[in-house]
Length: 65
Image (cartoon, rainbow, N blue to C red; front, side):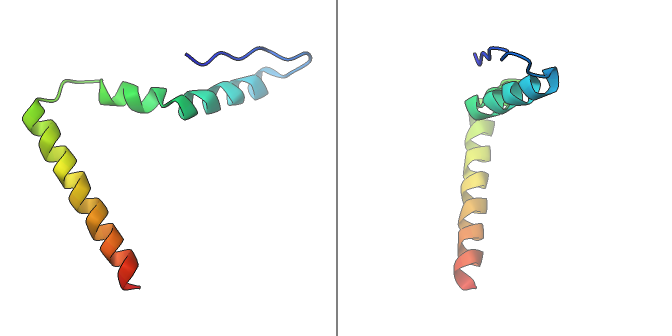
């Protein structure tokens, strides 16, 4: 869990920005979205395969340039 300590004379907006950056770095939001609903193992496997195909196509397009 990201924790920040408010520095002396630090505006709230700056502290909030630091907290959001720490949350993003820790991957909390992406983990929350992933756990938002249950995926059956077969669906999870299909999504993983589709992501792998997409990465491979992207890599091939980049190499073709």
